[in-house]
Image 1 (spheres, helix red, strand yellow):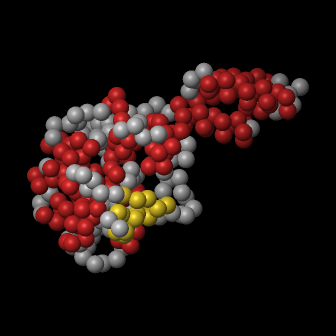
Image 2 (image 1 turned 180 degrees about the vertical axis):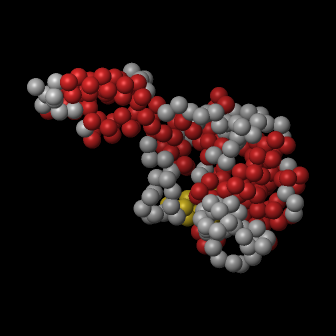
Length: 262
């Protein structure tokens, strides 16, 4: 009869399958077979226990197949910014998107952490979230995917030796043309919110302009690029996790040196 010992056996079985590089889906299929026989025998289905589900969920995160998105590296970032005059209709828009691109890369931002989701729904970074402190930027990430309670996290961005992609210089240049209206940081000249769609559209156009595939580079490529570039430069795993505010080993899916494009 199944009891605690048998439950432990199932747990160890799942763990061993995970260590054997089996995917969460493959493990679930095997457990489905065990579950089927347990039901036939009118036994308690120990494969559905909370702990077993959590272990499989964890394996799923670690083994999750990487999508085809490529990283935006420092070189690609520089090329994108250099071509903004060809893709933005005004100097204000050039300064705006330069700042968004630089922040998305150096702060490893998710798109929801950077800009508003729509013209009517404010979101992303707010004006008061970014401050210049002793030639560095103090950036408050109010809420993120791994911070659903909204505790917030402070990150610091320093100066870059390359002026065109320097976060501090980009921010100061943007503040010089931005209105003083409170709310989301990234707004157009008419004070309307920069949206996820607009961010994605301008990036798409810039990627096409430099001859890369827009299917391989999306807004999340900035975050992937931050992790990949950090790894190439020799950053430790701990440092990369801190950079992207990752709380688990899932950061490994963002380190993609094999997909680096020139």
